[in-house]
Amino acid sequence: MAKTSAVEKNRKRMRMVKKFESRRARLKAIAQDRSLPSEECFAARLKLAELPRNSAPVRIRNRCELSGRPRSYYRKFRISRIALRDLASQGQIPGMTKSSW
Image (cartoon, rainbow, N blue to C red; front, side):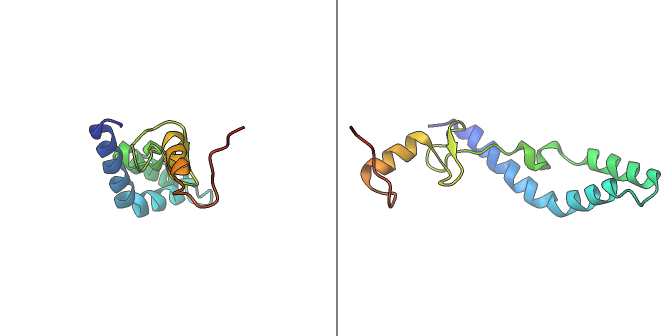
């Protein structure tokens, strides 16, 4: 089980990303628009830099929904390999069985 503080910090980042999503997208569009004057693009980049760092989607860490484990994460199932193996062994995931030979 992962540290509760790390899981909560990641959840806080997710909320912050959602909160600043529209503002960040608007500023990025202005900053990358080549038809606008360079001063306007530069001003948009400065405003983008003033936004909180944790409002960037890059800062979110993929974590297992069950255990909070940050590594060996399967995007399709949104869980870690250990949780996936446990659920597959119990028959909780349809069409997946633990291989044995």
